[in-house]
Length: 272
Length: 272
Image 1 (cartoon, rainbow over the protein chains, first blue to last red):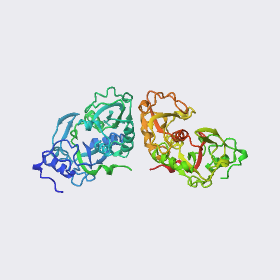
Image 2 (tube, each protein chain N blue to C red):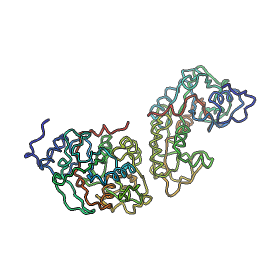
Image 3 (cartoon, each protein chain N blue to C red):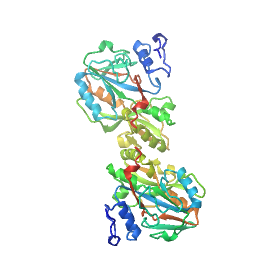
């Protein structure tokens, strides 16, 4: 399939290919959330750091694989990530970026070509869109999707394992499920260690330092019914929070919800 | 290894082979519980029925695979079960049997050779000893084992799918676990569908009709601590309860805890 002519793109149809989404982002014609686009393909969180901090961040990810599942790491200065898509240009193919200086958000450009340096290292981390698709494929209902909300996210009392300047609490997402669905969700998401894997907690939120499920730290609250358990998964906001907290001179990430769309199929991440 | 001389056997050491346990049972020298014997080998629940009821019972097992995981079914009149051990004689190799007439327990012999008929069909069903071993192998603690008790069992409000005269509630075992162990236990026991597989419920017991965890219907109560979830698995007492309730003219089972010790290794039952 040919890439769509950029001029025609306002919003992209779900049937758009990963390359079409990236090319629309690259041309500047598309700068919106990628949820639901390029059906069944893996979307990733982006972190770009100068090489001097890249080693610390890589160790942080290695030590905290559930919140920080690495899908790819670029060579210093490399703007392509061929493991995730032959033609990816990491400087332009994310619909919207965030630029951080000393831990402060300073810009939300649609392109970072002008900032690019030959010591920049790109990290792409798995995202829960992939395992949510696997749950939906099994006929499971996810309340935040049914209600058109962002998933509820909470900072916990569980610490990450620090590396260099990177540290902080584990951030989790919460999805309410009936017990049989919770058990099935453990089975299904266990197959996807590259996108956060199995839950990290089920049941009483106070055991992991969450005191009010109706007040998430990020995203939107959803109700937990009396016949449901709150089920908690490690969340990709964990490394972003660690990154902000580290107050590096310069860091670049994707803007929330505006992910890198890759050529990998979600099913290719299944471990068995 | 040679079978032990029967005259020497009072209680068997854990290192006894499956054949040694069976031979000691066969000779009458051993008629006790088999828990902990023939380390790492599969132990099974036994049901023996006249052929006229065997078809119904087989359909009951097929329709309720979680409480009734079939490991082997004999031919009518066949006293061997070569799939579970080359030399098994089902008429003598279980340490103690129970004989039921019209649903009433009438005898607990150590041998059923005198009752044997050429229309008898033997069923061997998986037992939770196998998955408990898998949990212990992962370093998990199980409270009823730590406290030297029988596992707590409860009749639930969940119905089985009936077949012929066989019906009744699902019976479950309950083990208290911290959330991270509960998640890991779902992963581990999912690998063992032939020995009840993944849990059927986690959390609030009242959702499955259990109103007091301190009063099990069978076995012994154990405490559930504030930082634990009760985790419920389908239990092999389910088919035994259905069998008693069916009030057949004649049925034979193992006596509780006195299992058929097979030559299969627990690990051989792992599905992946």
